[in-house]
Image (cartoon, rainbow, N blue to C red):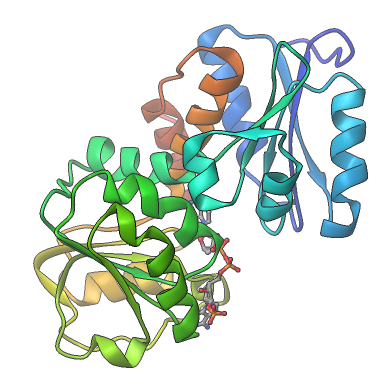
Length: 285
Ligand code: NDP
């Protein structure tokens, strides 16, 4: 691919920290696979720098941006217009320059998660009991697309109980959803447990009762790393049928953004395989 960044369409991911982001690699693989000519880079941007950085990026001809921790709420406030799913989540991870010069904000995280669960891992969410651990930005982003899968019930449990209760109340009109603290989980059982806390990033686990996972249930950690996260290991130790991490979600949310920007849907499976092979220190098949 050409490295002449002045003549080709430019994209970027802003975040803090951003050094270890896999997004430039993912979008480069998508571009190669689909024959699209574009340049995508990662930029370290703090919340204080966000507004001037995003304005400068689009003023200099940038076509689209991904925004990650801790910038998604700021990106939501910046977008002139948002998709319904971003409006619900009040967080934006994708900004796209529109033909009329306006900036559209979208949130592709929830669809990315659902695609990974349902299509890549063949999990049927209909009529299931789902537990979401954590009530931060990621939980907010995944709730709408999860509820669209028609689960029997969604429970959000959070360290700060009030945040879980408040978040559940915001989404209550969409389906059976309630919020609680970790202590309230005793005696309950779920078919799918999603870890959307940032505890994994520091190798920690929320306090979880022993019998929380139903027989034949599965676990999914939105976080990912080169080694299985603490929550993926918890799932394995509790006989989860599948205990997965968020690498597939990362690739799927990127594919949704790529589609929004380029109108072309990349194939995600080879990219997930490539990244999996890389972290398992194997040669790409
Ligand atoms: P936020 O900072 O918005 O929220 C963090 C959440 O984690 C809060 O609910 C917080 O609880 C909880 N928490 C933090 N530390 C602990 C702990 N030690 N024990 C229990 N709960 C804890 O983060 P995000 O929602 O943006 O991100 C959450 C996770 O999702 C991250 O690991 C992130 O990497 C991952 N993610 C993955 C994506 C992917 O594509 N795979 C996409 C988006 C996010 P409290 O409210 O009490 O502070």
